[in-house]
Length: 86
Image (cartoon, rainbow, N blue to C red):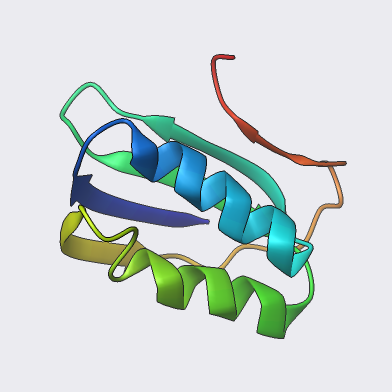
């Protein structure tokens, strides 16, 4: 699981989805009530690491203040990457 705090326009979730899909990573991304963005990534270790690395800076307009990453066992529960709540 990867959670991170980011500020930007609505493009952060869309950009995260594009990055994850391009890397072949599944899971989800959502906004939290406190303004943070939370995501879960599943896939090959190198692909997940690539997307998590991208999350440290996000899209051009983003200001990322913190990234917290917690490793969890692979479950294979996701078939695609989506924006949660849509």
